[in-house]
Amino acid sequence: EAGVTQFPSHSVIEKGQTVTLRCDPISGHDNLYWYRRVMGKEIKFLLHFVKESKQDESGMPNNRFLAERTGGTYSTLKVQPAELEDSGVYFCASSQDGRAREQFFGPGTRLTVL
Amino acid sequence: QQQVKQSPQSLIVQKGGISIINCAYENTAFDYFPWYQQFPGKGPALLIAIRPDVSEKKEGRFTISFNKSAKQFSLHIMDSQPGDSATYFCAASRSGGSNYKLTFGKGTLLTVNP
Image (cartoon, rainbow over all chains, first blue to last red):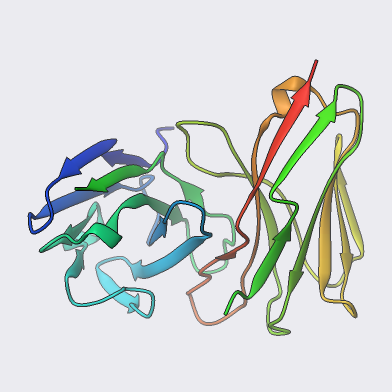
């Protein structure tokens, strides 16, 4: 069974540019989470999808971040325009259903904003 | 406000020794406490988890000790091996509909010397 995949693995962009991160959860997993780890800090929750519906966006830093999960399969996280403080590692995780507490994490996308 | 505090930040142990990582939480609504292990270039992977109705859970060389009254839990790695060298994250979540977002500690970088 394939795990959670994320693309790209690394992204280096200039301040003001746009970047789109992609996450493919484990097939059949309805729950999809985005997290971010800024260097030296803890991994922080960004948002949660159940299928294509956003359930909790309370962790999104500001309106420069837009997440989508069309069709309830893969998800994208767009940052537009990117700022220096957006640099970090963005993780995606998925879980099977609401009662399944274990979340399976992807390898992350390391975003560097110069 | 950091809801889950983890210590130490880094830990060096000799092969065969015991590694101990501690976490403390504030939110008494948390009801699930996992530990994640992360190797370089990989995403966090669930190692072991505990619920507050038990005080200890053991899986192989890994043990979680849980103290509900003190709001603390810890990971013990017995007979530590060089292959255990990784970053360890404690986390917590609470039941709430289908959203089981994780609140993480800052992580502990464990190095096991041969």
